[in-house]
Image (cartoon, rainbow, N blue to C red; front, side, top):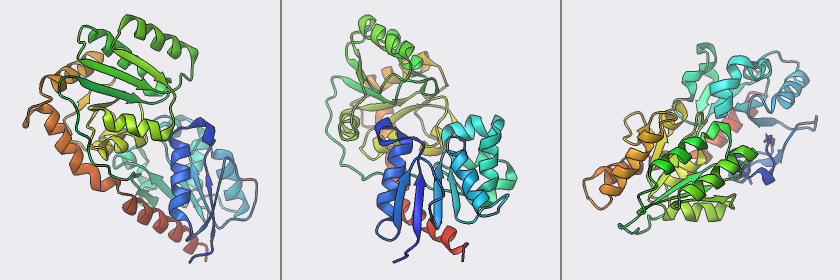
Amino acid sequence: MNNSRVLIISPAAASANNGNWHTAWRWSQMLRPAFDVTVAQVWNGEPFDVMLALHARRSADSIARWAQSKGANQAAPGLGVVLTGTDLYRDIEFDASAQASLRYARQLVVLQERGMDALPAGLRPKTRVIFQSTAAQEALVKPTDILRVLMVGHLRHEKSPQTLFDAAHLLKGHVDILIEHIGNALKPDFGAQASACMVACPQYHWLGGMGHGDTLQKIAQAHVLVNTSRMEGGANVILEAVCSGTPVLASRIPGNVGMLGADYGGYFALNDAAGLANLLLRCRAELDQTNGYYAQLSRQCALRTPLFSPATEQAALRALVNDLFNANT
C-alpha cells in the first residue's frame, strides 16, 4: 500500500450535487485504501504528497499556493489539474488565473477524448485522458407506445435549457412524447421559463433537483437522454445513460463528441430546438423497429460502454497519482 496523502480539491460542496462534487467523491473512493485521501474545497497549507484540483479557474488560488509552496513557476511537484468544460471552452482563453493553473500543473487531465484539442500544443504532452465511469446496468424493458425523454442538469446558461423548452413547444401536440427535466434553477429566470413551459406544454414536466440514486433510476427508465449544453468537459450524465442502456441525443459540441464519438448519429446543432424535436420525432416513429434509428443509437452507445468502466477509470486514476507521487521522489 502506498502511504502517500492525496488531497482532492473540489470547488463545489456536496450540497451543490453537481458533476465536480460527484467526481471528487467517486475518486476518493477509488483511491482508498491504497492512498490516504481527503476531499476539500480549498488547500490551506496542510501536508499532502499529491493534490488533484478540479477546475483550473475556480481552484486557482489553491493551485497557486501549492506551486508557491514548492518554489515552482511551472510543473509543480505533485500537482494534477483536472479541466472542466468551462475551463477548456471558455476560461483558459481569457482568464489569467486559469492560464496560470495550466502552467503550474505537473499533469493535466481531460475527461473526454476531444478535450486535448482545446489546449495549446505545448501543454498536450503533460495531458492525459481519464474517462469517468459508472457501473453498467442491464437495460430495462421499455414501452413502445410512448417515448420517455429526460434531460438532467441544473438550469443555467451553460446547459442551454432554452433549447429543451423550445423543443417542448414544437412537440406540444405529440402526447406520445413525454419530456421530464431534472435540475435546480440556478437563476430565477430559468425557473420561471420552466414553469411557464409546463403550463403551455402539458407533456413537459420540470421535476427540480433530485438525489443521485433517484436520477439514475429516471435515466434507466427513459428511452432517450437529452443534453443541450453549450460546453461540457465530459458529462457524467451521458456515461450514466450509456451504461444504463439509454441512448443520448446531444448538441454537437466537442465535449459531447468526445464522449459519444465523431460518427455518432444522435447529434443536433447547438441551440437547434427544431433539430432536437425532429430527432425525437424520429425516435418515436422508429421506436419498435429493429433496424430503425432508435436501435442504431442504442447499438452505437453500447459500443462506447467499455470506455466508462469503473475498473478502467480506477486504474487510470491510480496511475496518475503514482506518477505524481514518484515525480516527488
